[in-house]
Amino acid sequence: MINRVPRGASRENVLEIVRGWVDVFAAQDYQTAFDKLGYSISSGEPSVECIARAIQYYRSPDYYPGVTTFKVTDWRTARGGNPDPQQKVIWYKPNTVRMAGAVAFDLPLNGQWSDLTADFVFFENDNPDAGYTLRLEEIHSWRQTQREMEAQERTNS
Image (cartoon, rainbow, N blue to C red; front, side, top):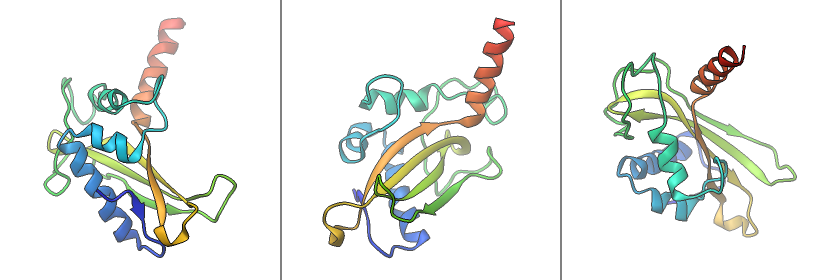
């Protein structure tokens, strides 16, 4: 699997690389993803288990009412669910952390699009000819986080 983004890559080139990693998630090969990309943000020490847990603990009463078991599925055949799934590439000017860009990609779960987003980032490295180093930053759902915070506030009131 490719864990580099070539310099001068187009948006579509970057998304093609990320879609390859979504295929790795669909194969539930989290070990390869972790070994090649890492996992920067997690609850506790980053590990393979954190990737699996981020997917398994996803919940959405809007897109998956009553569903409690999730698996990343093929992005090519996903239908329904989130009506506007993100597949966004953002480029940055060089900065102190050497971040060159980021990708937000909403994952297809159980055959339909979700709002569970895999955030990838890519960084400058010491060998400019090697392109940018791709990393997995986080897997999260902002809507789920919002619902959980609101539920906690109601409980504490």
